[in-house]
Length: 341
Image (cartoon, rainbow, N blue to C red):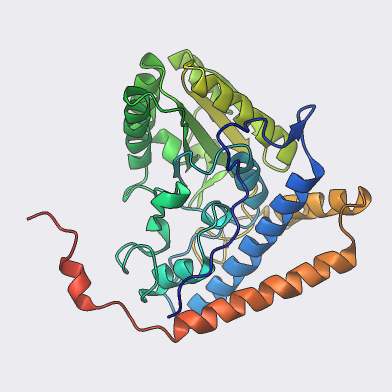
């Protein structure tokens, strides 16, 4: 396979430039257009991966992030590209936003050459250190401990980085959540914990699994800020994350941010969601639709420009898929590399 084509990352590339594409608490016009385009790329790409899984080309292990892309990307937009990120298992917008090539992501999904993990981790363990992408834990809840440990390293090395850890509402009920937030708070570590609460842990509604209405309210138990934001409002998400980053870089410790998110698709690629009665209502609350209307009303993009954007991205995705399908599977010998003796 040819050398992976990089996708443009859109976070703050220059550590000296932290004001982060905001004006009066709102993302500027350029940032909104960039977020929309990357969200569209993620939506189209994920849909194609789901189709490929249904065709039998890859295992149906993808956890689609449709509905949560805008919030994920707004959060990353106000961070530096060098800030380490542990992403959640739902969606690919995080790694697409950080500029990981589509061909590399497809290779990871299909165990072909050209990926980031030599076929060993699939989509949930895409790692690109140069882009600040550190994957996710092998078990849900393990990421809290990793993020806290990375925060300790950043503090000890006196680096000006912030570690951001995305996770779901179901994961917030693991013991590692409480242990890690407590220690991060005690040590004033530069960690931003972002809970994407879409109301569902696989097929279990949050209302029957979690004792509190707002997961962010748990922050009070650790003496750190807890903030609830609307996942459909890019400005609100960006502002909360920017403030948390400023606190962390100033040595004031972690923040717990809860994004009230919308999960449009099933837990995994072929999940039909027969257990949900709110599917139609959620489709109407798709943050992509809201941002699309906002961009048109503000005169930032026309419907024709968006249609052209969709055609261009679809072609880009199909070209990447054709390239990866033609690539060889990774060698079985790689299973014995990078192991402890």
